[in-house]
Image (cartoon, rainbow, N blue to C red; front, side):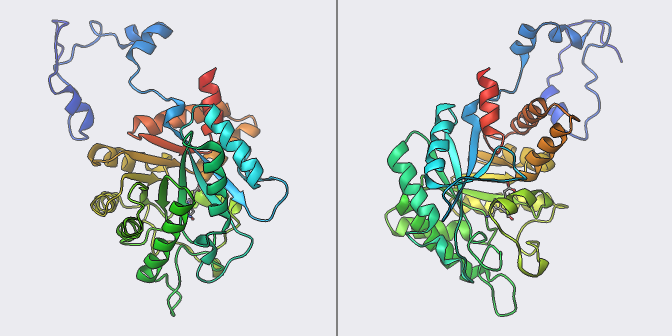
Length: 355
Ligand code: PBG
């Protein structure tokens, strides 16, 4: 099977590596003519042939703002992260911008919750106040993405309002999402990011925004969001627990399925999503890869709280080199096809990239 010419060229090489079915590229030169190590010999050679690059411009930094506190509160399970006061939030957003990270994604922790999650659309709700302050201090320096969901604001912890039987009422929730989108747009969000996995949420939000003169506000759809145990530290960060030990499997995707992720993305794009997201990232790189190959819009991936916390915990014990593992993970997410990566490692990665 060896090709002795040394100039053998496999025209289908790109297809061959992309196709799980294909065998070895038989037209390739073989050892000892072909030596893969030649291009790995020096750092400059490796740089020349590197096919994936990570830059601060690829990153989005998640930030939490909590109502009614005077000092930032450290989030134990997300080392380096805080529930911010309004002041410390603005300072951290400035820091993010100074590292050339183009965007933040904002989550609110309200002082009180109710069955409907009404603080989510209150013009004086914590996220709306925070958006106005960020917009007035930072102008357009950093893209303000706002997570759009009800779970931080409902007393039962679900992402929508409940029907009489205790299930999440999809269509009744859409109307609330429209209100939240308007409140966030009016407070200065550039991008709203619905994360609740209600059917029709992108269309409902787009219609609400356009109907109120916010045609410029973009929608980043959490399109393929799985019911994952990797969100654990995030729920600590936003003080959310689901009533009665419940879960989100009735609306978030089943980790065993990939095809439905493509259907979710197609629906969200058809409903007007400007960007789509796959979440979590690392445990779903196959999904990300499949989505990135097909989506006609930019694709984001959420390197979620559990994915970050596991590396931090192992590094803390001296079991892995935390910086190196985080960078390898971020590169893996980009290599799989993400155009933007939401990550709790955004700030440290940008620092490491700056040298
Ligand atoms: C829902 C939301 C969640 C995350 C982002 N938006 C939690 C959930 O669906 O339970 C998780 C993010 C993370 O784990 O980093 N508002």
